[in-house]
Length: 97
Length: 97
Image 1 (cartoon, rainbow over the protein chains, first blue to last red):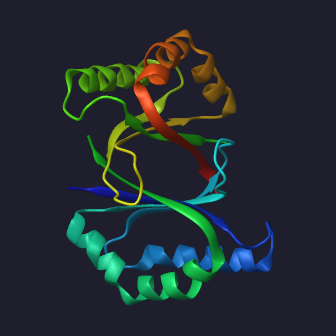
Image 2: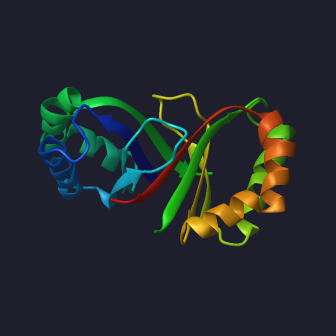
Image 3: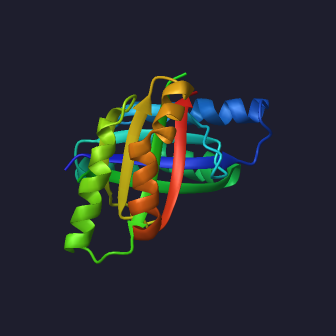
């Protein structure tokens, strides 16, 4: 079953800083990992939460999602960028109802 | 600027109950409110949060979003169904980065 994987997040970096731009650039490279479809890097503009950005992507099925999670480029991003640079986040994954 | 309005939520109703089905049916009717585009009623399947469902819709601009918020059918849904039947929720709104 097709899965939409989303994450909303807030960075430790100041808005408009070079560090923020560097992080967003690195996040955009996740789009190249095999199995990733409909990749979107988004700005979170709602006022009822504390997140500033979002990422949304789709996978054809759970196997494609697993392949992404285990891909060396994803693992390296999580360890090298996500964990040290993200202050808070929430993952939400959706399928058709 | 185009806006994607999303909300993840958990109902007070038991899974599979007639009350849950009734709520989801009523939520689906929001799609008919003027200005609502790309309406989706979704199942939340991620294990790192406590939400069971999601709704996603898009608006061409803030004026369309405001029109939806103020529309009598939306106001009636919030008062008559959402507030009494939803246990917890989180709204996230996105624009292009």
